[in-house]
Length: 136
Image (tube, rainbow, N blue to C red; front, top):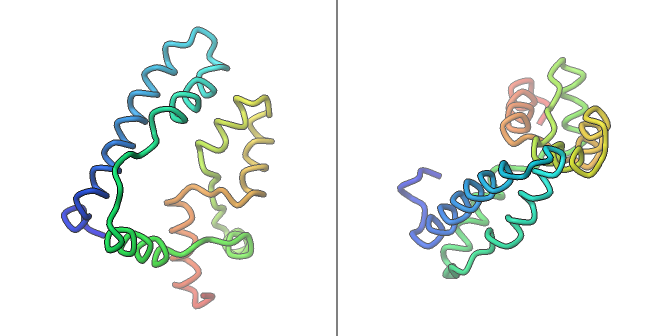
């Protein structure tokens, strides 16, 4: 989807979400204890990232169509990529949240991968690799 093709209300929702992320990161960095900054970030996002901009049925349908077209990386697909030498990265926010909750960084990485929470670009790269090799 090209930015110009995004329906106006959907674009506004995304911009509102992006603004909430920027605001919450600034607020989280004000926390004195570094181990608590991610918790502060998530608390802030719970309050600020809620959308009040409704979508029309057409906009919602277009969004769902785009999301479905992106595909979804499964654990089996990630395992195939690892066998080919490409290891899918975990989603960084998942890792940061689990570290903030008390897990060691390596445990957080393993847990996020077990849960199938992959970094978006890394997942797309894996999917492209599998398509390139004729495995999809």
